[in-house]
Every structure is written in C-alpha cells, then in structure tokens.
Image (cartoon, rainbow, N blue to C red; front, top):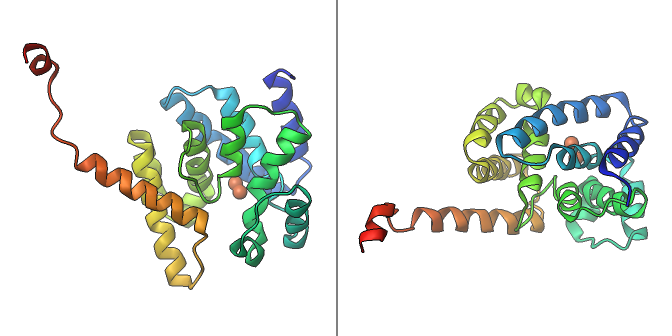
Amino acid sequence: MQHIAAQIAAVRAELETRPAGLVRHVQRVLVEALDLAARWDLDPERVELATWGHDLFRSFPPAEQLRLAIEAGLPIVEADRADPVLLHGPIAAFVLRDRFGVLDDEALAAVRDHTLGSRDMSMIARVILLADKFEERKRKRTPVMREIRRLAWRDLDLALLCWADWKWVDEREHGWLTHPDHWGARTQWVEEHHRELALPARTADFDLATG
Ligand SMILES: [Fe+2]
Ligand SMILES: [Fe+2]
C-alpha cells in the first residue's frame, strides 16, 4: 500500500484537474476539516485524504455520474436516478479504493456518506460532512451554518442533528424528496439524541466508590 502522503498527493493532483470553483470549495472544506480534526484529536492526514477525495466526481454531468455508478455496481435507488449528483460520493469512494489504492475504510465511508450521512458514522465521516456544509462560502450563503459550525466545536452529534433538521425544513420548503439513506440516518440521530436525554442523572465517581 502506498504511504498516505503519496495517496494525498495523487488524489489532490486529480482533484486539481477539476473546475476551479470546485477546487476552491475543497480547499475551503480542508480548512474546516483540519480545524475540526485538531479539535477532536483525529489524524489530520486521514482527514486530508478524505477531503481531497470527497468531491472528485461532483462536477461530472448527471448522466455520467449515473453511468459510472452503474458501471461500478453501486447500489442505486429511485432517489439517485432522480438526482444522480447524489451518487458523486459513492463513486468517489469506489474510485479511491479501486484506482488510488486507498484502503482506509473510515476515510472511504466518509467520502461515500458526505452528502447524506449514514447510520453509523466514524468521527472522520462526521467531520467531513460538517466541514463540507459550513465551509466559508456556504456559511455566508446560509447563515445558520455559522451556528452549526460553532456547535460542531462543542458536540459533533448535535451539530449533525441540527444540520439534518435544517435540511428537512429546506427540503419541505422546496418540495424536494428526502433520500431514504438520509432519512434512515436522521431517524437514528434523533433516537440517539432522545436516548441520551433520557439517561438517568450522571452519578459522581465518589458515589460509585462508596456504594
Ligand atoms: Fe459533495
Ligand atoms: Fe464538497
């Protein structure tokens, strides 16, 4: 397996052949993702690899995205056919493994799930998804992303849940469909959040020690 620094260089070089606007977006995501990686004590190289890789196919025409996903044998549901741009993460994860020799499953899943989220996300996946949503340009366009960015510094799960709530409202207002993968993830995050709230009051250590 190639050393991760070589993988980063290769994936970055490929991404830099894409349209300039997309390259600048990924550069902005990297600023946020490395910031969160430092906050949450994650390996910055794994985060950087997933960041350079996440939008490798974002600029491809929808018909091409659909063709690539079919060719790769990826699972495709009706919502993907209706909006093939949703496949750009799964295609990128497939190509990163297949062509760039990336074997880091958490980094690959982070790339695959960065648009919609998924039920069990690693810390890297949570960081990539959120950094992608609140990079500087997006939080200027959608000010609520500034709050989600602040929240991510304190609690990544709550930040994800708030993003999912914003997305839910946004989709309803526009009359857009909700992708079943996202809905599955969101449902799980809501359940976990309420389970957490319903926990008994935390017991101080000295209570445990003295019975
Ligand atoms: Fe993306
Ligand atoms: Fe992105």
